[in-house]
Amino acid sequence: MPYKNFVFAKSSGNYVELITSNQKKYLLKTSVQQIENSLNCEKIIRIHRSYLINIDHLIEFSVQEVTLSNGCILPIGKHYQENFISLVLNCTVLM
Image (cartoon, rainbow, N blue to C red; front, top):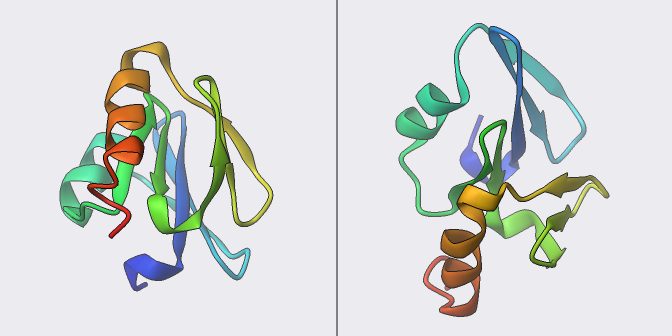
């Protein structure tokens, strides 16, 4: 799956659910950390201990949540807020 089709990943116990732009779901026996490390792409960022998003699918955000192109609204964890806001406001991953 090319990263551009990847919208977000959600931790679900011992599994990670990957959601794609065409609404397909893939369930993998791994962790969000392992997915984050294996993708190794500046467009894929951690916003919560349970969520990774593809910044290309970001529609809008506040300090507490993001809205993605598929309509999902996900929380931003307090630990990840500063890094996320910094990345978005400095446009380091948007260009």
